[in-house]
Image 1 (tube, rainbow, N blue to C red):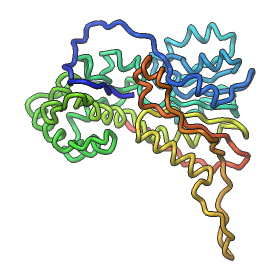
Image 2: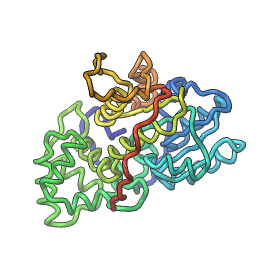
Image 3: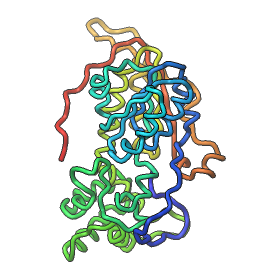
Image 4: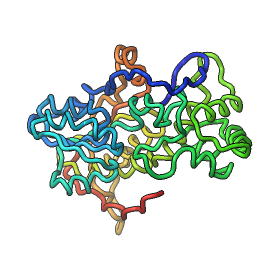
Length: 339
């Protein structure tokens, strides 16, 4: 869910009010099919956003506990709660804390859990949130509107640390050159807006025709770092494993390679894929039984029609698996929240 787009890099636009296109969930029908939603089943949507997946589950007859760390999304979802006839509960929290949310609502285990990873198009379209270089706005990127912002990272990180963020989270090959340019410019004046940062990056690493905007990967990297998204995903997958009942389904839609790799490796590890079947040596401890069964026909990509209608679907991959009866590994000790 990045600002990817083809064509000559365009300058960020002023932060005048923009007409907001309706948010369209990617592969909603495929995700609901992967969950095998049943009437009166209990489901958890870890990334409520504009309610696309939740709405599809409700229409299929399910009951939903929906989470979102963004208070704006929760406030906007109250009308859907009112129209759900008591079948929808909303909670503002990170999806890595879904177990705590379920306990507080006295819910679970669940028949299905769905996660849509990354930033929503609604957040990208709001200049004041600072997620996108398409509009000039404050360099923020905080989903929860608290904690360290992207401006804090850009202006405070050491040059090598900033380069590592851009490389590891954005897979930006020009990370060192971009980080050096940022450090030079911030010595003149703090970098506080998306327009200024995008211009610095474009000068340091000029784009080519028919390639994504040169700031795309750097903005992705900063957003992931600000919101600790990869750690969140890792913890959420393990929490979902503990919350699903035997036969329950986990469905995850990811939008770039870092996220998809985490999901793929988690499911491969928990399903026993790649584990050689062999007789144990005397005293050797047997490996744990698989906690997930990976079903065939995946990953699923969005259809050509959907990619035309909704360009953000072009990079999306859907993976899903079915929970077995094997016990989950013990939960890792809770980590202190970073500020």
